[in-house]
Image (tube, rainbow, N blue to C red; front, side, top):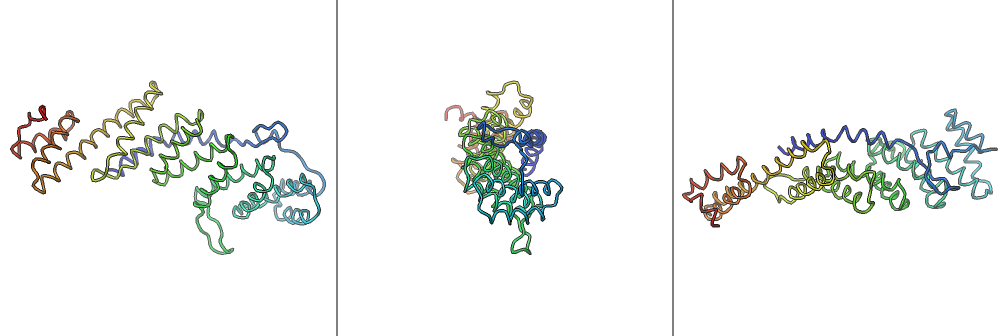
Length: 324
């Protein structure tokens, strides 16, 4: 049952997620002149000399030749502007060749050496692309031979982006990417915490509705079954109700109403199972208590009917629940 519910939760949000991802493919980088994040095409600039040669080679996808020129160029005495530009082009070569581990190492140097510069901002954006690729299953080569997953490295990159881009939209996007990864891979407790952070710490207007819905879905999906604590169900109920309060006319309202009914049924089922447990170990009074809880709290469920039958079987007066 849990797998079925989890499956439908994933199906319910996939279309929404695809639409949101399409919106996020827009490339934004930091313009050092205006101190604003702008569409990349507004701040890309041509270079001259050896940098211009390398840039031209990159444009024609001759990445190895460009790397050779840039490697020689970086050995010279350079001012900060030329060194930053060369380091960025050098890192871009590795990135465009799909050598993400090398690119990550090179972009990290820029981020550590030149904070609050145009190259720093572009490096962060490229790091976001690398993290996305690794989280999507792109493997990295280890020791030049073995191909291994790099999801942990990708999560570290996203955390690094958050730390280095406080107050900028890219930090918010990085946290959302992390939350979505946890959700996709069934790490629902981590997903719920990340979506809540997106709402509370970032006060995200862009993702508020999305994150509220996903945090509720994550809480529900994290419930392992009636044999376990039902705190996730209580949290999911509260989060779904909060969503409806904030978005009363949302198209998902009928779906959420159905989910809330299913949650109510599962909580009733849990209390009924507790009663059955006490019945099995011959603790009739305790069993009767929980059967009456089911009838009182969840009167319109199938489990309430079954609880009444169990009380009669145990020889208890069903009506005594009104005085308990």
